[in-house]
Image (cartoon, rainbow, N blue to C red; front, side):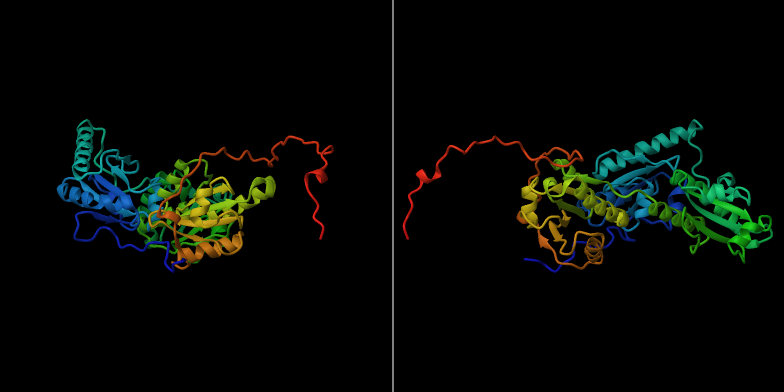
Length: 429
């Protein structure tokens, strides 16, 4: 029976203003954490994550115990994916310790009880104080930036540095006499330093003195100062529409970085661990059951996989898991999804926390899959309960070798000396 409910959960934030946990987002993260002298413990969570929901009471209790000593924050990384991606968050909850070097946080490896969290925070704090006493820890993060991280662009180097680069560029066109440009300068420099470190140089900030390099100013139709434009390889430049604070600039840069991030990996279901890890780390798991290799050959199968890879790229910001298996290799999985031996290729989207799934009813094509996933994204589409209410048994199988299939060899039987008429009596009508 199909149920008219959504696979995508809508859950309120797990923390409120009444808690001692500071809610963090791209708009305040730089100000609250990066520019702070305090030690921070930051949880990256997703509201639909069961482990995160279990952690929340202990996280709140630890935040209260550490109030005034260590800052405790939380990022809804499902909503603020660029912030989670910036710090390499792949599963939930992930806890990071922002200490002396705020741009290189450490992974918290301790227990998840309130006492364990407090102990871990105090150990990190002792290390920070010890480093500062020895002169190694610094006095926290500087609120300024290094002007050297803003690349000076000219008529001579612009094409090579920007247009021929695989990196994303935010370029400010300024005039030395412009008051707004002077106000932007420290914000631009601070953002350049943070963005360079946090994107490992994949997003860069530059500046053009448009009064000197008038060829560039004319080429891009600069009429006022400062003007900021976004340059991506092979695309027309676009006007920057965000705010002018370092936080706003960093947030936009990280969004651009996320846009250019690689898509999730498409994995073959070879064992239970692959299915479990991929689906538990993701809100939705997109699973395709492809025809047997003898039915399609390598070219046909690669065609289906190419469609899936394109869809994974299109929906990469969703942080969904993408898997495939061959028809007949995981019969229990097929049975639990109601696929059952026919209708290949087939596709299902599974929410393992709700044990609900939806089946692709349209064509296994970019258009058909896009329509299917778009409906799920906005909370529409029919779902059903996974057969048995639990994930099915997964068998260990050999990985596809990328080649065409071969029919199994059979023994030859010579039937030339068998007289079938002697074995059957003929009935007269």
